[in-house]
Image (cartoon, rainbow, N blue to C red):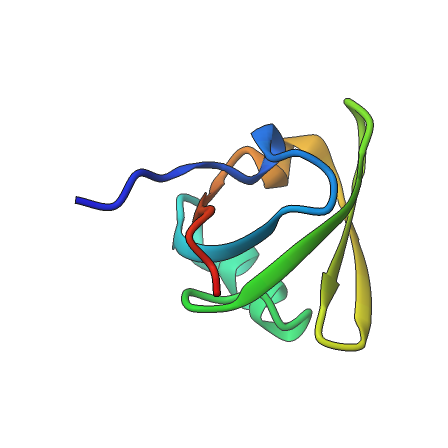
Length: 78
């Protein structure tokens, strides 16, 4: 079984895979519009206890802590 943790708990410079999004459909659609969906690979650029800054390929994305806690990821990204 793959160990998943909330995105909000990941350290800076970690590379993670999105495994599950525990949110309503409207929020999931907004995240998909930002390029964040199940199977996405994200790099944590900043995580200072508030907003997070992520990299998804060449795109930089800022997420609030409440949304980042609903995105479950695994740190086994290649």
